Amino acid sequence: MTTIFEALKDYLQLNLDMEPKNPLHVGEVMSCWTYLTIVDEANIYIQVALNTTTDDDVIKSLKDSYKQCDAQGQRFQEFLMAEGIPLPPTSEQRPLSNSQAVPLGVKMTDDEIMNGLSIKTAASITHCAASVSQCIRNDVATMFTQCMLEKMKFGASVKDLMRKRGWIKVPPYYYPPGAPTENS
Image (spheres, helix red, strand yellow):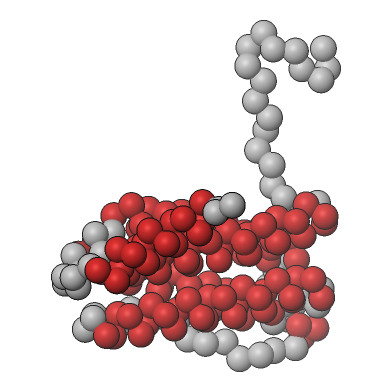
């Protein structure tokens, strides 16, 4: 049975092959430019986080995210350069440091690191979804769709680790007026 993702991929690929390559419109340029900035800046956050944690599970998640952001960033860099679009400026890369040498008042906790990573992942997914909805060119929509699906898969692993460790920040539960509550 064909999954919804396979159907979407086939649809986009069919239209991609037959589509004339019009110039990017300003929304597509801004979306690509912004997404490249998002993944590049996420990697700076990850470098800082790697310098402060010693938890093997957190380190694995950070390294997985770094590889994913790096690969997606390369895709967008190559695409923007091929389209003649200047690349966005990004922060300086961080050198590897000894996490034991980072003072406690400066050091992020593993909880903070993973919640920050979760927020960046959710923001990336949301940006990709919004960008797909604005795309005219199917090649651009396909890039954002691929990145969104990759981020969604990664986000599920982050959520599993956060749930296992008790790090998920849960908003208050909503009980409609008149509905029975646990205390009733």
